[in-house]
Image 1: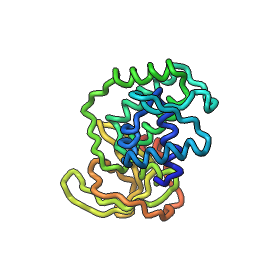
Image 2: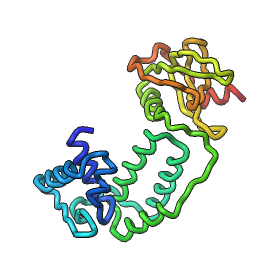
Image 3: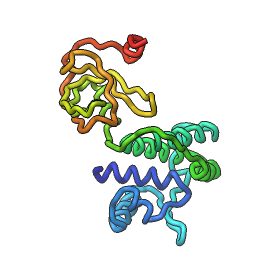
Image 4: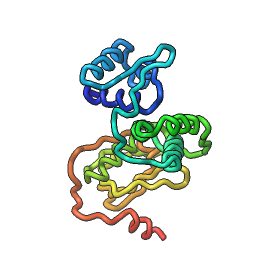
Length: 225
C-alpha cells in the first residue's frame, strides 16, 4: 500500500468510529506508531480536522464530509451480517475487502447509528462447518473471471493425483460447504469443477482467454442436471 492509499485508509478508519487509538491504526495497517503519527499529522496539514482526546483517541467531526449515500439502520445492519458471514465463508482476501468496505459504510453513519453498528458486530457470530482454507485465491479468481485472464493452477484431485492446468474461469460456485472454481481446462479440453480447497498454487498469467466463447455458469450447472 503506497502512502496516499494509506492516508485515505486511515482517514476512513477514523471516520468509521467515534474514536480510534494510535495502537489500533498501527495494528490494522501493520505500521509503526511513529508512522501513524506522521500520517495523521500529514492529514492535518492538508486540512483534515483530526481531533485527539486523552484516553479516547483520534476522531474526525462527522460534518467533515457530506455522506455520499444515506443508509437506514436496517440496511447498515444487513451489511454487518454479510460481513460476519464473509468471515466464515470466504478467504482472507475477500474478508479484507469486506472489512474495508464496511469501514467506509460506517464512516457515513451518524454517531448513534455508528455505536449501534459496533455493538451489533460484537453480538453476531457465525458457526459453521464450511470448509474454507485461507489460501487467498478467491480475489484473484474473481479478477480472472472479470478480466477474462488465464490462470495457471496446480491441482490435487480426490485421488490425491497432482497436475498442472491452464484454465479459463467462468464462475465461482459455493456448494457442499466449500467454494468451487468452474473453468475451461485446456488439459482436459472441457469444463471442469475444481475445489478451491484442493488448489495447491494459483497464478494469474495476465494473458487473455484463448477460447473465444464460453458458456455461462448457469448453463454449466444446467448441463449437469
